[in-house]
Length: 428
Image (cartoon, rainbow, N blue to C red; front, top):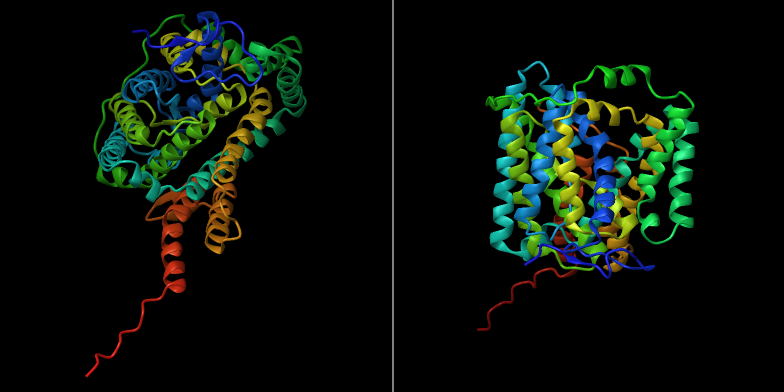
């Protein structure tokens, strides 16, 4: 049996058409969507190793392998790309004096822990997912994940405002004026347009262009053997909590966009991401997560085909063995990424709003209103505190606030409304 059925004639998309995870378009069109996903994940996936000193091409390799593993474990039901998780940046940078193996050993252990949580979710079923992440919680997590990224988009935009504005304008024009297939790849069209404009105006970074000429066409990525140090492992624990919430939020977001109940796949998604992170830690790559950026692309295109993610994963694998091509993609200016990110990150946040709207979340309820409000401010404002030597950022605090406080405040509120009946005096 074929892994994917062909959607319609495979070539044309009517307005409002949705391509399901188990469907695909013609292979040329599917490859185009896969390349759009590859471009979308590339900058953020390489950013983490560049910040933390881990090998970028190794991260790219395990990103591709992890995505393929994820699609197999979720049985083609959850379209996601597994890229570098920025949640790991803080603990990795806090332990930068340690060996690369010591830090990747911590990633390996965190991946095992995420896998164990996934096994528990799979064993106990969807009720555990709903008790941990009801719609008010999942919506808030998705919103703060999307809008927490807003300063990154704005910073990139401000670096080259002219180029960023042209890229943003190209994305919006492509989305508004083009029809069918071309309107679905508006982000890719905008990025390519921005890069071409930068090239013809001589605004590509000279150092990065020199790196393209110097790089080899083919080369093996370097690998790092893991080491296990308790203090580094402990510093990774907050990331585990965040990634569980993030993964569940992403599954809920995809379910909302596709109109499918994916609670039964939540455990598989956690297992897939956990194993992918453990695999990356075993070889020297960065920890992985389901990528909000690519979820934003699906929200814009309404093409949820997992075949496109296979293409993106294979592209990542090929790029990991081609230092020259990786250096070429790295010439995409910050302003181009900033212009595209202005659209994508906003779409992610609005998917969370859509979860609230479709589930008719009562924002007059003081528990929903106050707990979600505090969590969103912590996440979007990027509240950053150091606890026991580990620096924890806004997504972590926002997620923890809504996950921990919402059920607690709900229980207290219920107790206030329905106090236990006072004991009666036995009759004599």
